[in-house]
Length: 219
Length: 283
Image (cartoon, rainbow over all chains, first blue to last red; front, side, top):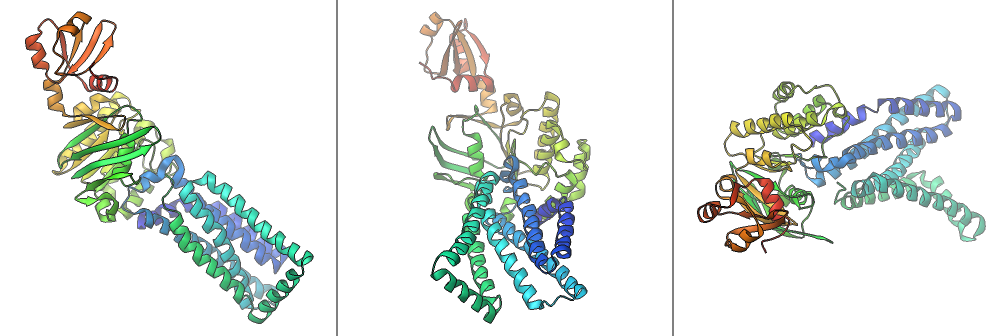
């Protein structure tokens, strides 16, 4: 397993420029959009870094390379588990870095933003990104990069449909506004806790189900 | 060391069904045309695909349950599968050091330099021959007991092939108990290196023969139509019509030399086996 981590670290290290550009963009987002920039910056940073992480899978799979990698003293189960752990580590590290940046900015710019709210926003975004990329990662591990791109596009379509459907439900149905009002009420009462809990539950399902789905691996 | 028992894999136009063993201190060559089932067999041995039926054991354990410690005793090469092209041998050395307990970084680097392989250039800058040497050095770098080499000399010129074969021979001579299963399209490589040859055709092992047996007993007969009608065919393994009449393969060369001194009979090569046994049977 140590060898897998080192291999991926060497691949990620080569992408340092992406990390620098992402950091600058995230910082710029907060400078321009102020508090809203936290969401924008988090989105940019987590998504970019996670896509860079997915590139480590593509590098393994290029030219049937995975067949050779699986002859190393590891099992296919360990390989999949390490990739999911790497995804989590990349999203976690990026989220922490963004939170530290936002907290620093909060003090510097005297934002009236509670650290717990900031934590809720960043945590929710991190979980959403984990859900999207967890599904993509599972699909890529099983079917390869090309089909994973199609899956990611479909997933984006589903997300857009959900958002669009939600807006349409609020505007054109009787139950939509009630549900929205209830969601807002829950959010006001419990903060982002319910949202984080639901997303967390979904993340656990993707974590466990995705690792199972990803085998057998595309070679 | 390796026991492949009734390994079966079914595809729409192809059925693999093979059984064979590789013992310690033995070098076994797998020869066959493209699509004969060599790579499928190798992948099944490495547990890279789940066969439809059969049992494969390596180091007396089913390959499906090999622990990482047992897998560390295997070295493998594939013609088109290796580390990412962006890695240098320095990177690969560090990865191997983190993966194998029996790996010594300084020895690996020294071996690379002895083969004139640059340590700090990415693999994408390597020639075919350099890559082949790098793959073999990686397979041999961690004191593996069993080497599984799929086309290790593919695409190499004769000089590099000889160097690669010499590296492999040195590795085998260095320690008793090691075993190798390798495939190659280049029959002379297998004749030079192997103790035993398995000829695979359309998913079946058509012939298992030691190189000594091949060189001592096998022969190719060149016969005109009248001669072919007269000779006893019970010792002919295969015959193929040719412009001059027939070309036939026997595993009883001496029988034909003694009983038919007028015939043209030459010692058989692996190429002869491949051509005659994978085309059509004796009529």
